Structures are given as structure tokens and as C-alpha cells.
Length: 481
Image 1 (cartoon, rainbow, N blue to C red):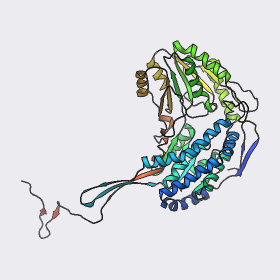
Image 2 (cartoon, rainbow, N blue to C red; image 1 turned 90 degrees about the vertical axis):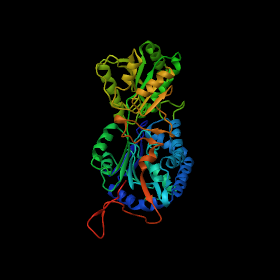
Image 3 (cartoon, rainbow, N blue to C red; image 1 turned 30 degrees about the horizontal axis):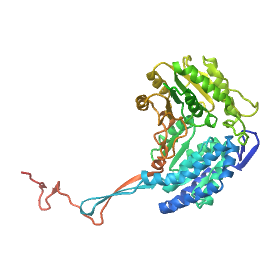
Image 4 (cartoon, helix red, strand yellow; image 1 turned 45 degrees about the vertical axis):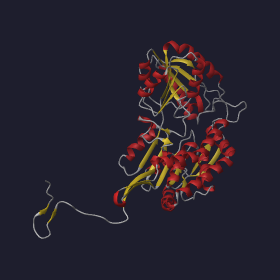
């Protein structure tokens, strides 16, 4: 473990932030000791504390957006939308907690009551990603705190500055410092945190590779909650439509928003062969117009850089591998600034490739597959071990019903992008995309567990069968005529 972690701006390479690595044992111990008192607070108290946090986010919104933009490279306009999502999460979580984990009482005979209530798990770890360094971990932290858990939060080692500011905003709103702890460090620190015996669970957003490793690790610990929100090799299917231009816009939004660094971005465009040439020409024309620049550029860019040079190198190498294995280039992926991780959108037709890699290429790289039938389109959409999001563009209500019924994904849209899901709905996938613990509105489900109770003010009990006669050796039985 290094003694210090340093964060650099992707767009400039300049140092942005540095901080000392954390002592995982100490941070977990503090959070574990603090959670009973926090859990004992009324949910109204916790709700109001978190509403003050939302107010603090709004008050510091521009500073937080600027930091997000600098540390991730995403355009400032997009960073501002992330800040809005962070603030809005509180009211959505309060509503979700009431709907998903309500207290219920059912009156029975003779004063018997059956009750269902929910308890927090205890001390939970949250591991955050770099692409939405405030919004995505916040989507775990807020519902976890609301339910009465304490939290140990480790931001991505690529975006620690945003993580540190997020925790400061929670603390300034009145969340006790002992209840929400910040852990700074690299991958080894994350592994130590995930394996810590003092935790009651882990809430994770990140790559499928790490998620699968965590799933194996937690397989021997069924008493600990594990919520995995992972990536996707997401399909967008374009079928019968006369509005090719709008379809192209939806494809570009799905593939290249956030420089392709959303788990819900479209990775594969599956298109009816008879529409393909016209659609691809429109997609290429629009992709050529996308501005790729630093976060604060004027005019505002559509895309900033990817997170770092290592990620950019991996993506350009992946593009070359696809090309050398039968992919037909529609638009080359280029590096406009030699030593910085800016990438222009890459589009490649992989229809003729004998084997297509089922991996999440986390960046602005779109693969095209041409098909002749709608059944083939659905088969291609499902030709992945992932299952996060899928969209159908065009078609009829009947075709959408068929697509919805047969597409294997946790988010299925019609005439909408694959990304940009509502926070008022669950968000999660199947297969390598998640472990059936959807987040967003359903995060309340994994932040507390249900307790069923049977209760009575007075003791009443009897045994009507199977007892010996107290004055003899015969069993007492009832005779039914």
C-alpha cells in the first residue's frame, strides 16, 4: 500500500489532488462502533439529516461539478447533471424506503399481531467507480445511511478528490463522522476492505471482472449482503423506421455519451440489413460532428477524454484487434492529442467476424452487426453473457412486445437510448451485469432486511394432542366420531 494517492486531470495531465492512504482496520472499527447509535435514531431524523446533505450539495453544486469535470474529464455540462442527480437522490431514496421497506401490521384473532419491519445490516462498505464518482456511490450511500447502516466508502483510486468532497458534504450536513468513513487507497486497499471481517456487507459498482471475484469471495459468507452493479455489452436494435435521422441520433447518444464510459452505453448496433447503409451514413456524419475537447472548452464538447492513457491505449488496441480479425472500419478511432486520453468515436462493422469478443469495451467504440430477420436481431442482442440494458429503435408495438419478452436485460427501452435510466425505477442487470440486486429505486431492498414478528400482549398457550394422562400411562387423544 502506497503512503499517498495522487489524482491527475485526464485532460491536462496536471496534478489535481493528493491524500494519505487510509488504515482500513481503523476505519472499519470506527464505523462498526458507530452504527448502533445511528440505527437507533428515528428514520425521520436520518431523513432530515440527509435532506440537509442535499441542500449542501446544491449550495456547493458548481464547485462539485467543476471538480467532477476536472477529475473525470467529462464536460462541465454533464458534470452539472451528475450533481443534480446526487441532490435528487435523497428525496427519491426516502420515497423508496417507505415503499420498499414499510412497517406492516396485520391484526389476528384474540389480540394477536403479525408485524413486518426492517433492520439495517450494520457496517457496509461502498466501492465506487470513476465514471460517476459522486452519483453512483451516492446511490448506495444515501439508502444505506437512511436505513440505519454505517458506511465505509472507498472511491475509485482514479477519482479520490470527488469522493473526499462528497464525504465532506455529508459530514457538514450532520451525518456523524464516525458513521460515514472515507478510505483512500488503490486496488490493494479495496481488496483489504472487501475482505474485512468487521463488515456486514459490500455495495459495489464497477467492472464485471472485479464483481465476479467479489461474488466468489462472498460465496462462503452468506451472512453478508453483496450488491453488484456491473457493466454491459449492450445492444441497440434499429428496425423498420422511416426516420433514419432520429434513429441515428439515438444510436449516437447511446454509444458515445460520457465518451462511452457508462455501463449502460450501447456497445453493439444491430440493424436490419436493408436499413444499414442509410443509417450508418447518418451515424457517421453525426459522429464526425461531435466535439471532443477538455471539460471547460468553448464551445462545449459532447465528449471529453476517457479516464487515462491506459484506458485509451486499451481501446485503440481493441479497435485494431477487431479490424485485424475481419472488422470493416466505418469510422476510425483516433487520438487527436498524442499524450492525452482523448479519443474520437470509433465505429466498426463486425458482421463478418467469425467470433466476436463478448467484453465490455468501456469507451467510444461501437460495433455494428447486420441481420435480416427480427428473430436474428433478438438472438444477436442476447449473444452475450451480460444483461444490463437493451433498446429497440423503430418497429411496431407488437415487435416491441416481442423484443421486451425475449431480450435478456434488466433495462429494456423502446425508441429511447440504452442509457439515461430513471432514478425512480430499479437499475440493474442479469448475467455478468449484476447479482439480482438492482440499485436506484430498489437500493432500499439490499440496505435493510425484513424481520417478521408474531406478537401478543398476553401469553396464551395450549397443547391439545400428544400428551400422557397425568394419572395414567395412556396418551391423551381426541376421538372423532
